[in-house]
Amino acid sequence: MTAHEYFGCRVPPFDSRPDPSVFFAGEAYEEAVSTLEFAATQRKGCCLILGESGSGKSTVLRQAIHRLRTTTHILLVQSIGQPRDALVGVAYVAGVDTPPGSQHFDEWIAQTGREPHPRLLLVDDADELPAGGWRKIVAHLASSCATDHPVTIALCGAPTIRDGLTKPRLMRITRRVFRTCRLPRLTPQGVRKYIETRLRCAGADPRRVFTADAVAMIFRMTRGVPAFVNQVCDNAMLEAFSEDRKPVSAEDVARAVYAIAGGGSGARRELDDGRSSPRATVTMRLPECVESPTTPESPSAVRLASEASSRGAS
Image (cartoon, rainbow, N blue to C red; front, side):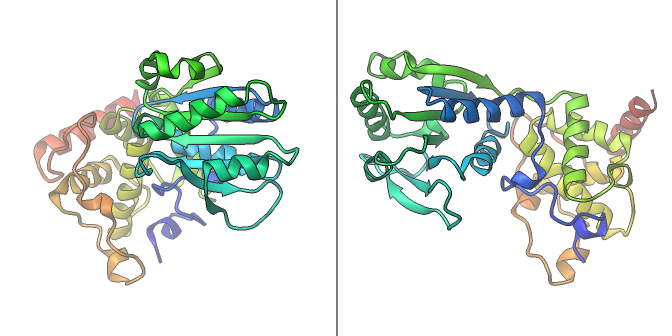
C-alpha cells in the first residue's frame, strides 16, 4: 500500500508532475486556461501567462492541452535546453489520439498550415528561451501578418518577460499581445481550497486527510506557492502513513518540512514495502521563499504546531 492509497486516493493528489485529473480551478488558473482556449479558437495573436517559479504555469499549459487537443494543433516548447538556433517542441495533432512527437517549429508551421484547425504555440519558461527561439517567433509573426490562418502564441514564464518584450527587436510580439494573465500566490483560504480540490479529484474525503491546523501550517511553511504546497502535502502524508495515523497533523507537516530541508525522515513504511523509490523531494533544500523549518522533536517545532492549532481553533 502506498501513502495516497492509505488515505483513500485513487491517484497521487500532490504529484510534482502536472496532472489534469486533479486540476485546481481557482479563479486565476481557470481564467488563464479559458484565455488560452479563447485565444486559440478565435486565432488571437499572443497571450502571456506570468507567475513566479512554482506558481502553476506548467499545470495551466497542460490543462489547456487537455481541453484543446481534439480541435487544435498544438506545439509545446520547453525553453530550457533548446538548441541555440532552432525551436523544437512536442506536437499534438488535432483530433488524433496518438502519442505526441518531437517536431521543429518550421516543420510544424508548414505541415499544419494546410489544415483548417486552429494552431497554438505554447512556450513554457519563455524567460529562458535562447535568442534563436525568439528570432523564429518574431520572423513568423512578421510573415503571418497577411495570412488568414495565424498561429496563436502563448508565452509562459516569469514576470520579467514583460520587461524583455520592451526591447526593440521584440516589439512585434508586444503589439500582438491579446491578454496577460498572472498567477499569484494562494491565500490561506486558497491553500485550503487547493488541498481539498486535489484530494476530492483523487477520490479522498479531505476531512479525513488533513486537520485544520495542518493546513494552516502548510500555508505558513509554503507561503501559498502551489509547487511547495504539493511538496509539503506529499511528504506530510508519508509521515502520517509511516506512523499508521489519520488524519495528517501539524506535527506531521513540521516533520515533513524538516525532511524536505535535509533533516531526515521517519516516513519509511512505503519505501520498506518495496513499491516506491525514494523521492527527490525528501532530500531537497527548501527554496529561499519558504520558511526554514525547525527540528520536529525540538520545543520550537512543538510551539509552531501549537500556534497553528490555536489559529485553526479561532
